[in-house]
Image (cartoon, rainbow, N blue to C red; front, side, top):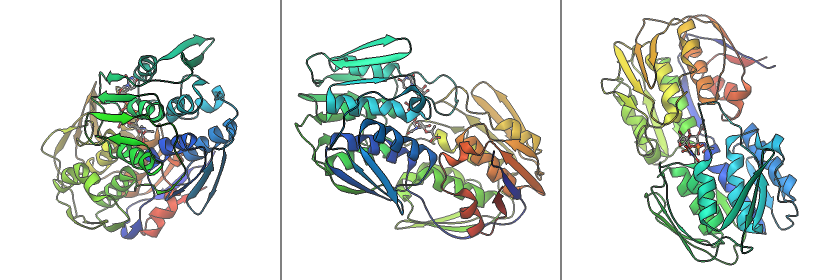
Length: 419
Ligand code: EPU
């Protein structure tokens, strides 16, 4: 098992080109199934979750290959409609393929998806939406067997009980080639949903309202292939900004998505960091000690503070001057990184959805284990800020979302290596 060895206490300083977004690449790769032709996805990050998506596509009969952050997917010859359980378990996004396979073939067999353990992560909204679109769904020995009753899904009006990200993605994928019009109410407004819709429009789909809570999709008989550039990864961006802030450093992030990162930036600014944005660049300079954030940091659907950035900003705030309070509203088990931070000297009290972080003067290095993707990134940020050496195991979690994190950190002058 690989580990990251981090020799902390060095200020990060330099320029970093941001990777493409994992959370928009995954549904877009699924969407390529609907085109029946070759698609070229530029700025696609090369990550273990992306390779899982490629294995799913290849298993269905697509041809998917990568070179230099470009994924080329040819879905002309789909001849399988079942995703094996082993592949379903590799990540949460495997469930989104259900919408795309149904849209292309009218049937599919999946099972419960895997992914980071952040508490209970049901798929009830995905399933009930497919049913409303005319899909018969039965469970048999863990397999979820789906078949459009009339051979093809039809449009429907669907009101989600929570502004989920994944459920509207599944619905959109099924709806773009369904019969008639689909309306999704209470959809999440996450930029990655807009990126998926941007890709689908480039393939000939008719979608409006993405980025708002009401999305309207008019079904088309056929889509076609296209070339598309994946948006930058706003959460990886937030992570490198938080790491730099935690170490008292200075960074220019290039190829960043400024507007989409604003909910994070506005909180980070309260810590006393100077942040200047210009075109696709974010410049951050951090003072010697951060200030605690006075307003409670409440995770919310976009444009609220992103749950995916909660752990990394906490890693920066554990050594801030004063007390910061977090409220995690999206997942019921997203404070699993706090034990490792406490082991490094942090003062954190967790009570259900609240975490109270009292800033301590410094952290010390420790042997810690990543528990999930963003929690692992938070541990890496804390290790960079800590005095002494840390050893982080379980880094396969981190590799799911960060492209060669140790190279990015080393480029900024940090001391992190993989052994
Ligand atoms: N939920 C249900 N039923 C459903 C679907 C969701 O109850 O059918 C609940 C979830 O349990 C959760 C809430 O609704 O409490 C929000 O879940 P959502 O569907 O929005 O999350 P997701 O689509 O599974 C995506 C990202 C996550 C990110 C969340 C929230 C991808 C691949 N994953 O997950 O990213 O945290 O939206 O923004 O896009 C990560 O990158 O580390 C990550 C976990």
